[in-house]
Length: 257
Image 1 (cartoon, rainbow, N blue to C red):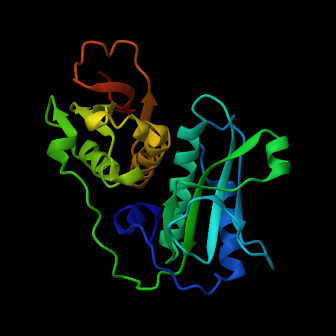
Image 2: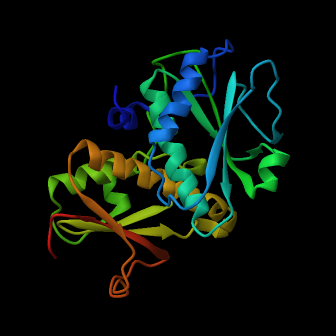
């Protein structure tokens, strides 16, 4: 299974075998991280896996999943740092899925590491992972249909639909799916949906959520051998989508429009 196939196979795992994962698999995570592509390479990040050899995992905050291992991602606190963190973390999730491991985002858990704090790095997200207790028995991801997520302005090309499907399958905090898409033949514009019922606290994770979704989009583009550009356009004000805020646009790079 490659990372693109893992987009369709991934689901949140909440019951794990508690036997530790082999050291070679843990080492493989860090080798993969050396090749993973951040959205903003200038933002410093690092990852650590807990428990470290011979130690028990100690997390602060709240984790609703007991797992043999937890991966914590630390980042500088800069503009778009959580977007970047989500983008990298989802690549890790897809890598773990491709290796037969399950995982589950733990948004309320934190790991405090004083020496990293002194270097200006703080914990953004914790990921529980290990071998699933019931492999192959995950529930199908509950996602809104494409028609509810997209406003189609033109008939999109097949590649655009495949990118949108990868985006649709992306996980998000409380399965909030905060993204909406305005779709044209060779591009789509991404908007952030205002939470219903005044639940503004969901916005706390929105930037991370969008990083996760964009990682799926770019992984699909790489698998399909298509060039895409992710750019924020200045002339987007003519597109109206009530109760939504413009985030970024994805454009097929070989097309002129």
